[in-house]
Structures are given as structure tokens and as C-alpha cells.
Image (cartoon, helix red, strand yellow):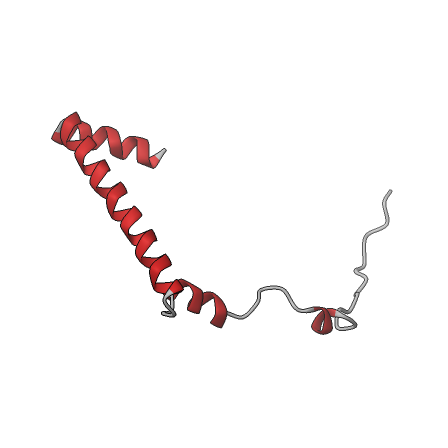
Length: 81
């Protein structure tokens, strides 16, 4: 939705031809970044996104951490009338 509104605002402000050219340039930049990232990873370099994922701790506990650690506490409820 935001992209559609932004596209309309740019086409009104700069014209359709200019907006199309800007879009083509951004797609070319994106494709270049994807290719450069793949070349960097294949050549033995490191990718920042891969390092971030590797260093981040897992969100869910592992099987060894979760077995036997959960304590079930019954909660008191009002009797239904």
C-alpha cells in the first residue's frame, strides 16, 4: 500500500517518465547488490547478514533446555454458577 501511494506521489511530483526511470535505477541497484553479495560470499568473504544471524541467540529453547524446566501452576478460578 505504501509503495503504491509513494509511486503515485512521485509520478505526480516528477512525472511518469521520471518516476519510471527512478524505478529502473533502483531495481538495477538492488540487482547489483544481490550479485555483489553472492560473489563476496562465494569468494570466502563474509556477509554481514550471515554474521548477524550466526551471532544472535535462538528465540526458542533447545530440547535440552526445555525438558523438565517448565512448571505447571494451576490457577484458581471462580466456581461457575
